[in-house]
Length: 337
Image (cartoon, rainbow, N blue to C red; front, side, top):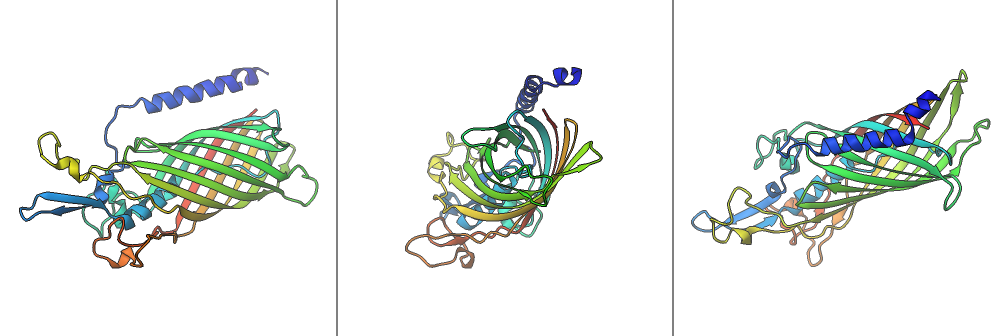
């Protein structure tokens, strides 16, 4: 009883809020994983070598936000069984997601040693994220519902994503029969901290799991599932020449541009994991595999493939997502009440 009083839901939630505020109050400065959108700009010059016009490289933009969307995709990390009407869960997790660090589109990373060139590694091939989450079982609007919310930070950057989900267990609780629990879930993730990009990731998944008791003390629940991601990028105004002061250089403001709205990007993921629980302590290990991107930003009035053009613009060609397959490995520690 003393443990439950000390680690009550209110105490743990207050600690989570305090930690999030502490992390968010760090001094502002450029970190290795901060993103510089102006590096995807193509800048034309006049006869004197001065910048005269700027636009975005649509092909690189689409592929970059596709892989970034997988990095900030809604967390899964739960088996099909819901927590139950009276249960809370608080957890911290650490994730590792691969990116194609040698691809030209990752020159947007602050850590890139050659932000205007290609053929080099622009940073680490694995991005690390830290997540903080709260989950609650409910009986409304239907039995066997579970909701959750939290925040994810890309370590080495000022980027955060607010995330939330609702899960409905279609079948659960028959632990003495050789039948799995089955659930469906809808989730959303919203990027914060990048003024040049508005990024939303919506998610739908189907999962199956089976709870197994060990020695009357441990509960082990392996799970597996399929997940569809909708990555919705919207460009804000991008300064193509951030190193130039517009107050001292006439006409610099005319070089600002936006990437035209993209057709939504779709990615497929398969995932598997296991949740182990002892008393109120739980450990979840998960691996998720996102297939390579192939969705097309189809522009009206043209059949040109941006990949075949020396300088693809945001309106003159069709961009196919060139994001490569990605892997995510996540470790989660939490308390169930």
